[in-house]
Length: 300
Image 1 (cartoon, one colour):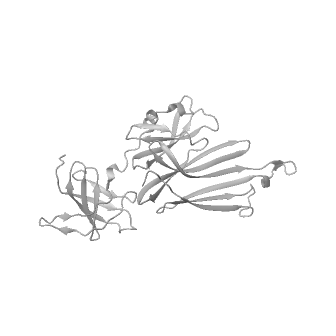
Image 2 (cartoon, rainbow, N blue to C red):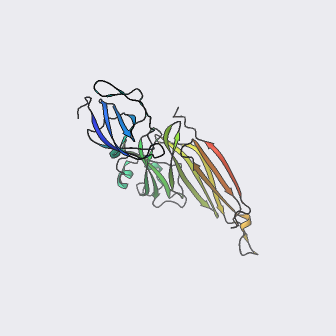
């Protein structure tokens, strides 16, 4: 494909109705080189622009994602050739076809793992992929996070996580999380005007009648997980009482934790609910909430 400047029309669908009513419209690439495409498009008779730092195909369908684009309205000036002169360039456009590459197969993910020494499976390659979801690193790189099970592992070591980066054709076990849980949630939010993803990732373990677990809110930087905040949970039925012939719930505990990520503000609400093991909520329970600011050193 030639890198010369060309004019290209494309279709797009706008999916952030809080900013602009969803419409299907036409856009035009008014300038194009091997490393930059500048686009202008019209929604509801309003003109917007975007800078796309990859060369676009001659004819492609695009969508504007709320995760990656904020609209900037500009006033166009017309030159003699009836072209738009643009004075501001913000945002970028993501091709639908490359918003996320195809999910790697389970076999591919396992074959890409570079730290099998951290596997709790026996043999180390005996890993089962239970779930996989698309995630983005703090740099914007597309990746995949999988909840996995380690076959023939001990009771407190059967669950874990694998981060896969198709760009590198590599995957790694996140050895600091797991145990008896491999559940996670992806939370989109905005930090300093940049859409990002935070991952709520669970760990758990049990012993002597007690179940301990945690939910860690992290962001992904290369292969590292950077902690924003964590909430602890625990469950214990209580000491056995001979008179009751069962555990005394009053000596037990049932502590729960919740992390609520605010979608368009850089804050997390961390809530803990603590009490005994008796099923008498809200009696005997205490609720505590704290507003935690999101701090990401990689974004200035």
